[in-house]
Structure formats: structure tokens, C-alpha cells
Picture 1 (spheres, rainbow, N blue to C red):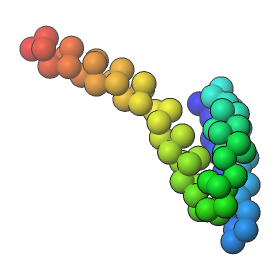
Picture 2: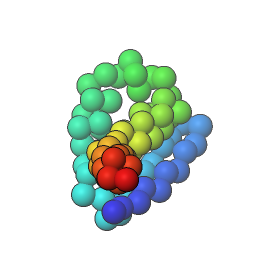
Picture 3: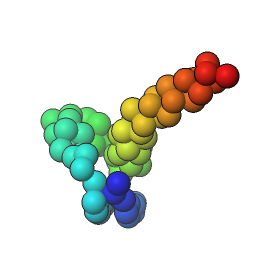
Picture 4: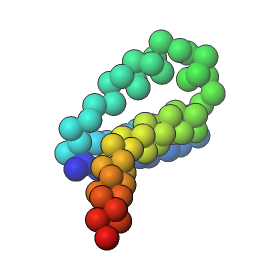
Length: 75
């Protein structure tokens, strides 16, 4: 499990990741090849990063849901 620190300013966004096995390289590449999206500003990039992080939790949530359903079906 890792952590991400985010520093947001009017014209910048800095992220510092520690201990995360999941790379943000694909997201960064997508943003870099779409300069029209980057022109939306750091708040757009922040949204993209947070969306990416939240999406990474879906497999965990789905696994927990399956476990809960097994317990409920068991009784």
C-alpha cells in the first residue's frame, strides 16, 4: 500500500508517491499527449489523478463484495 501527497497551486500540481506498486506513467503519458486537457489547468490534472487513484480501489472493493456475498449466501 502506498501514499500520494499532492501539492496544488494556481499554476502547478506536484505529486509525491511513496510505496505504491501502481505506476501513474500511463496517466501521465495520456495527459502529456493531450495538451488541450493540460490547458484546463492544475485542477483538471488533480481530478484526473484522483480519479486514477480511486479507480485503483475497484478490484479491492469487488473482492470484498464477493467475500461478503459468500458469507451472506452461507447463512
